[in-house]
Length: 345
Image 1 (cartoon, rainbow, N blue to C red):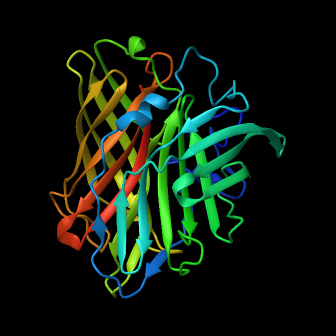
Image 2: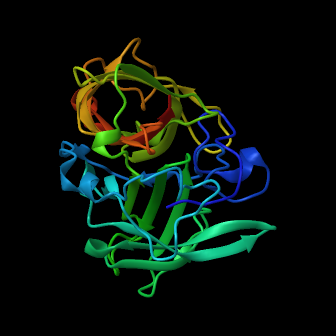
């Protein structure tokens, strides 16, 4: 789930799935991270209310993450061996007229490292991406956001990126099922990596920061566009998460968030989001809520909007933190957001 590109870190504010900000074309390196992925701007006409299913708990998926047994392997200078499987903790958004539905079904999704290849003189991981419940099995991917055609004719776009131990991925597929209409999409956000063993969780307190050079927050926002359609846009910003390892309390915020307004148009401010939760071993989960001033525009969420987050510490000694998150505005005809965050201490 990672472009596994040698050297570098996240290179641009909110740098998450598009290579353009780092130079070159396409979308989504692994360790050299860029700006937001160029997802299609989806309009679903004559839409009804957006329906959002509350994100579930972290569940057993986190226990299946590979464990960080030392500083290697990692995603920067000691790549995972061929055959390494990374289960994905996912949150997804289905867009099928007349509704968009968000949930945290992992769908049994996995990314497997199958080898490496040279791209522009740089070694990249070659990946296989599977979603059994959707009949997706795509091979030969490098997570650059280039669309591939599946055997049944559907189109899959897959981005990947990482910190040293935290792997992040985003994808969309259309139609969701072979033979469905062209306006039938599913967007997904996935998290995996080398999880911190419970015995190696730090003591005391720590603050994890993702500000564009070492992580950040990114996601999709689904809202009604004001003319009877559903509009899916990209959102990005910064993450700041504080953990008290003694009490297990987790608190944090997503700030400086901005949302796209359309092709060739400037991004506009979006909601700040608070996170409140707890840790168990090296996993964390809790709730989200919109905070601060309510943004203008169709994509802004009302005060009191809420959701969930689930994630874990990654690295041999809790060097990094990753999570997936959701937000839902029941008063805005069901506006919904899904995303992930990555940060280092």
